[in-house]
Length: 311
Ligand SMILES: [Zn+2]
Image (tube, rainbow, N blue to C red):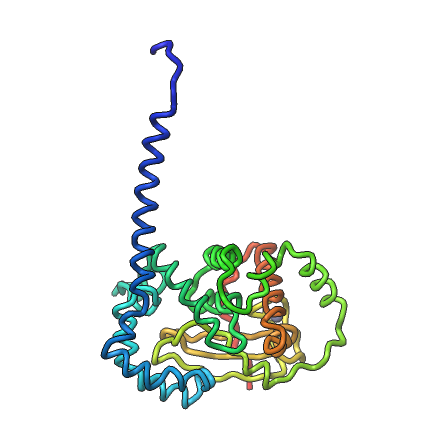
């Protein structure tokens, strides 16, 4: 052992170089992706399909027969697009385990960080496609649809806030809503005020909760309506209890071959209906409420399968 005092400078410099090398490799790839994004849409076989169908899809209700027909028309073009673009979860078909039947590295699980960044920016840009498009509700919906989990979803929310990405997000404009004094006032106000005006069912159902992507051709909404609840359950958005006898929106859909059921409580339905006028502001509050509740009870915000609402 020498008596000389150890100088960490050299080791730190070596470490700095190594980190820099890794970060620049990612940055390089991000730059390439930024240049290449959706270029395949400008060429055949995709171009003619997107020419013919995309403008039509805008005006159609997601999951409707007309929407399905238009999407089916896109079939080969859409398949080609997914096949050549890593920023879509559909690109990653996964590796099936014959014994267990489970599929590994399918969807977002097959992605790299660079893929995730491109996907996220794609969603943020897609929020301008719909009148009440909103990056928060987009992340929220995709969190369940693509099993993002709460940590990744929250990281995406943080990114939307930090970089002011995604249209119509009051969160992106005014900072993190959880820390916002208005949020606390609002939660108190809502928990006390029970004489809220009735929400408009059509406006509520008109809000499409799975924004940001075309989905797969086989995806379909089996039902989507407002019902009187007969079995108590947890709200998909705010994670609060939905009581028997109250109204709720229930939606059953097949996404990527999997049956998914969603139920939203009366207050969350109200926030969907008002999203046409308040730029999705209430939706964000409901989402934040759900995130906090999930954290409090130590549950992942990913939904466990719930009983289907009876007819
Ligand atoms: Zn709710």
